[in-house]
Amino acid sequence: MNLNGTEKIISTLKKLENTMRDEIFRKRFWFDFPELPIALYDNERVFLAGYPKILDGFKKRGSILVGEKDDRFYGNTTIDLEGYQVAIWDLTTTDASISFGKLLSYIFHEAFHSYQKMKGEKRWANELQILEYPFTKENLAIRTIERRELIKALYSDSMEELSERLSKFISLREYRRSIIGDALNYELAQESIEGIAFYIETKVYSDYESIPLKYSIALRGRNMAEINLKLKNFRLSCYAPGMFIAFILDRLDESWQKKYMNSERYLYDFFKDLVSVPKKSFNPEEIPEDVLKSSQYAICNYNELIERKFSEFENSSGYRIVLKGTFPMMGMDPMNITWKGPYILNEHIFGTQFNGIPLFVKRKNRVRRIEKEFRFDEIVFFSESKPVKIGGFIEIPGIRRLKAKLEETEREYILYADTEG
Image 1 (cartoon, rainbow, N blue to C red):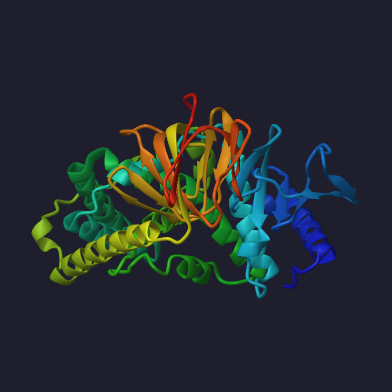
Image 2 (tube, rainbow, N blue to C red):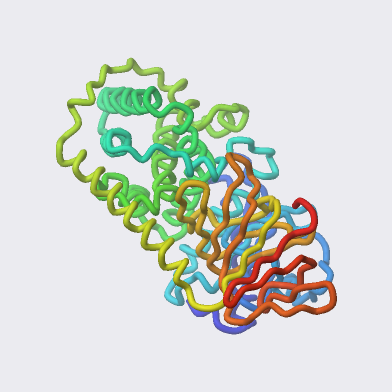
């Protein structure tokens, strides 16, 4: 699908809007899926459909609003745009060969997050909880076996087999809960939010492209049984189990969606309560040796990756810029972070405030967390150009002008915030 040029983008956006305006079509996927604003954007422009008013700086092109891209538009997600949830998609992340059905499924995924926000959904993950997640050989090995049982449950041929597989799956997961405690909530939250959005995406793709649903599920869940899990993709690996659980719920209770939205339970716990299967005992000595070895290999590989990424960052070219103060977390891309102790390496962006002024560092950066808070006391990144003093301000080329106290050495510049963020 060609998305080069304004007319092509507007035409595609209108087609997306018209397709998603069909209430019968939307409700094939979720019982009360509403009509919501959507936007496509590139490095320069934003194209907005279904928005109820004209935004400052935007002009109407028929039913579409067109304006310049700003810091509000980043990533593929949902944003609060002056009081309205809008599903946004960055066209620079999309391959030119993408089909309309696949793009539609991605937009539905993000629009479902808009729906979740509108409904006051509270089951979102604490994205920083992953910093304390126990990546142990035993936990990861049992998780692999557990995921395989979930696959077998989804594709079981009888209710008797389904019950047996679910009993094994739930027993394995509850054993993991007993050894890692509240750390499991990170996975449960991702399943509850991203897993269900993934389920919506999969159904839309299957329906629009007239592809068998079993194929579409298998395509998106293709890494569910993998032994050699790449731990850098751990967050993403939590999506498919949520999707699988949702499809099993489709089989068990046609009104589960409404019941779930009236519940405060994580998707897995809601599901466990509904199926009510007997628990089986589990002996960790039953874990296959090849799964244990692969889990240890994944941990070693990830530790090597962490050391390499942090080393590469510290050896970056340019001038080392250090911001010191107390900085709230206003935005980050949790799909693209690496962590070590209190330090988080952001591949693309970190959003915060410096002296109360919004600041977006749109380049690789390293931040230091204050204990277990959503605040940080140091931000480090590299710049090809030196910061420049302009009156009482410091201009960091490509970042912004900041009011700060400056200390400098030959290749390092330290800026101190005057107040807490």
